[in-house]
Length: 326
Image (cartoon, rainbow, N blue to C red; front, side, top):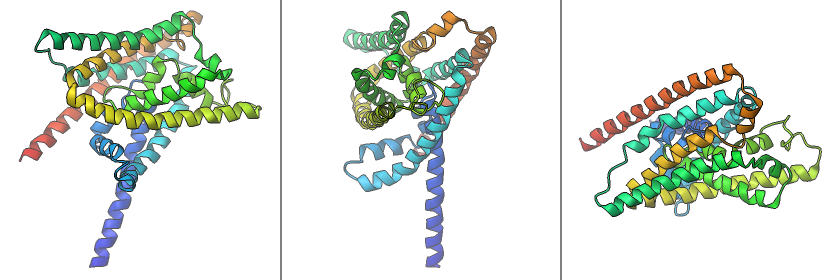
């Protein structure tokens, strides 16, 4: 009897590992797609709190936290890799279609932020809310527009291995991974806003692009590419840890102001997704009419999909809250 119970527990552990790994794959896919928030998907799959607690407890309970995170990490890597390869191949063929799809994910996630917004009780609070919103709106929207109008081509600097690109890749990893922690904010969308999404994609996930380290015959070029990849991973780890701790503090002490800032980031990012250094030259070269039409349709579909996902998540959370009170 005891042996049967032990076998049953072992099977449950193995099943739980693969289930968490499957959740990790969906988180990886959502993290790779600009506009789709890994934080939102984690909430929908009821693993958000588990992940945040495990990440913030790594120092105190490393072994326990690491074993909890391991299946999610493995699944995340598999999901992100598959999604990034697909996106890399599809963007050149239909840039506006993919952008419309990604933008719909962003637009559809707005209810997450709206439900947290409240009017300030005095003029000081209202001023802080407004400053938080407009500052984040200008930063998120201004970066994409500025890069497009000034024709800043980060891909060329990345290819030339300019020294400050190493720092920028590290910062990009911090920002992207940190943004994944915030429900409603997409890490890959953050990379797109600062103009680093497609340069990084073409460097590590393409065999035909001139940026790709896989298509180069130069040992030094491949070596520096590996260094960039390591910096990106290190930045991602730093971003996850810092953002987890920061979000706990901000949401505990300045929750409403934080969500006003998140709203500004989301709306500003929508502007930068359609006007940035990657897609602006494609507008000038000419985008096919069918691409615009498909992009508009995909925008509507992805908006509806993420909107109903959020509604489902809210319903699920309310039901869980009611059950806890019983």
